[in-house]
Length: 256
Image (spheres, rainbow, N blue to C red):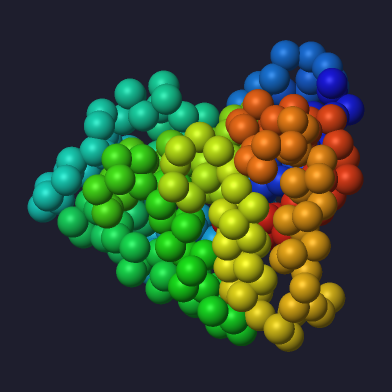
């Protein structure tokens, strides 16, 4: 399973650990330790690029005190609680929150903000639809806005989660109507939105029929009982066992 996990970990979503040396000096197969949040690994993530840029513009903060809550309408949960729920350190959470608050003084992110972020990072294409789907995956409460807690919990999974956690998050992205199943139509919508965002001038070039090819390939392998939908168990099991599918999902590498 370790070999399968290695293939999955490197292909589906950005991973903070990557192939960089383990700061704890542990060898492969030993107990996992929390990796340091290197700038190199973080900068794979558009949402973190957005936060880091905002923090840089704001300037360094000399205070190591608890989360600054003044003049914020939505106050996040305590720092210790978020630290326990995520794979981020106290200082990392403080840095993320400073950038988040600078961009979103209300303490909440709406869908239009997501669309703006992804339009900036993918100007060659149309990021509107993909930003909509990604926003819904982060919006755990389904109330049309993302709290800092939801934002940082999602980033923790995407950047430092286990293989299974990342696959569950990806399943949630594909499951547009959140009914617990992925249909061909849902997978096609997500794939098409990614290709639209990356643009027709992307190298290597993206053909019009590429999303359909991906969907057919996925469903042929994932829909094991041929009932026309993919369950989360089918999704996770197939991804962990099939390196070819994970190679196909390399497309996610730079679009989170």
